[in-house]
Image (cartoon, rainbow, N blue to C red):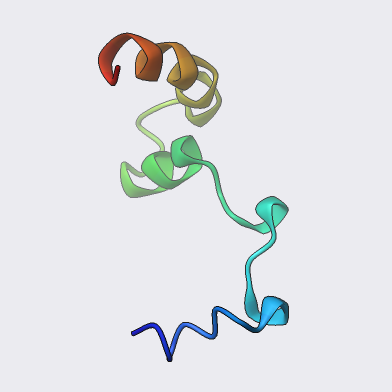
Length: 52
């Protein structure tokens, strides 16, 4: 898997602007039944309270 990843070829890496947010991914999965922006806005506090 490491060889196929082309980790050493930066031109094949995704740039941060081209990766969807977690809220966008979840909203697409749930077919719009949630607010992606609200999820993304609340995520840092939710992580702070529940992850650590």
